[in-house]
Length: 630
Ligand code: GP9
Ligand code: MN
Image 1 (cartoon, rainbow, N blue to C red):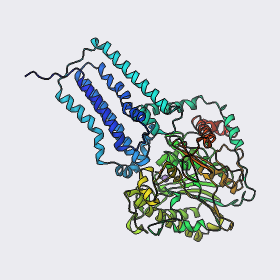
Image 2: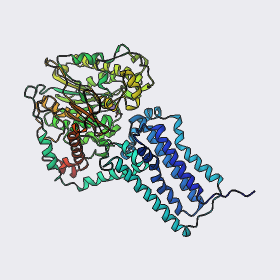
Image 3: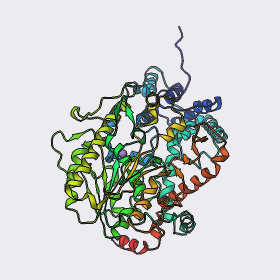
Image 4: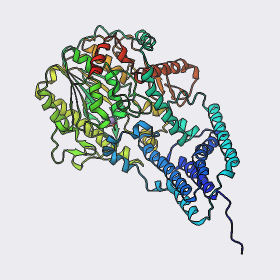
């Protein structure tokens, strides 16, 4: 019997097909991608190939069989690792990895619990191609390639690969015009150009932003300054300065979404204390208020509240631009006689805080070193909220007055673990372990805030303070739509997902007496000007995109970092304009002018950050010299 002869390059061809199909199948098993039509399905099918043909194609230049095989195995392994990492990341963030996040290794230790929870046994599937490649190498007889004779074949091969890539890009452009210029949504990118090409694109975008700083000279500021001035909201004379001279306590309520407020879970009240505050005479409760964070999560919310600028798309600005000049809330307060600080019982380098806080002129960071965590006082990501608040009040007593501090809570954080004794209500029952436990940790946080208020009163600090509290970002991602749908007793649409980005905002002014529930539509960017105006500090010269929520000029318009937007009449998400009243799609023309503005504003904010433009702003030049002298 004649022995079967494998054609030349069989191993290479098998490798390409194996990685291609593993990637394609992986799209469906691990990522929740919405495919609308056959064309999109086809693009998704060919897009891994456009990249794989090029990288695997390099093997055609390698003469020695052993080296060539090694190269092929390495490619299959690396592509598998890329897909596997994206899958794990996606379960947590509903998003794809971006380069700067990969370099945030200081976060990895703390993230471990979340990462391991998000790894599935079936993820070994992503390595199927590696196994196939190894088997192919083992069983197929190979000869050394005659590199010189193959030149023509190689040309044809790469011409075909380039044609396929062009074809892919053309189809992508037809499906999503301006995809590569307006890349707010990474899912669209991956759907159209594939995971691997997306990572190359990301590399290009990140390098570009570095170049932008080098070439910026400050002339870009004029146009942006005009835009900001035109949108400036005058303070409300009735509210301006009502909290003048008081201590400022800003509390970031971890992962707290607005849907739990004044709500129940199986008959259990979730946030009894915060519910009381919604009706309290000293409190303004905003129930139509949205977080505006992106991948930087808590750090993005901090950045937004400090600077009234948007975070960056696809990375945490705390990492990528911690060397910039900013005019933060803390800096303004410090200029007005405040001692400024942040209190957060986590390691100081998480989210690069130690570095970024310096850039934002925060005078003191009470990190985990400032707290003593006794046995039983830590759970999940670190110190429990109750002892955290407790010890924080002690620290406040010794602070120079008036002080302004931002406190960051931690217990209500994914994966929402809690010790038995802290479970004040039972778990919910649904297919999502995350949502089930979320109600319990939210309930615990509510208890912690209640005790914090009591402690503040006992300390004597309460009466002369203003307490601002807000949810930093969502806790329940779109991955849990099914369970959320069960809880809310309706099917969750993209419209609902946008509406679920509401987080509560409380502004509590002890003794004020005229507080009420506010339905003014606003977002986290509005916090900075609102606080400054309440303290009687003017902001008209400030470079900020938010506006005072109490101002009669405040416009009902919120832009999300990913380009979604909300007005008093519409919600725009996934390229569909929804009517807010009915939750049904409506005429796109209603959203059109706002889409335009959202793009302009997000671009302006990016231009400021990427070009580090605030270093050129009046009043900052001298500071810059001092900085650069150092
Ligand atoms: C970590 C804490 C949580 O210190 O702020 O960060 P998050 O994961 O919510 O961005
Ligand atoms: Mn957070």
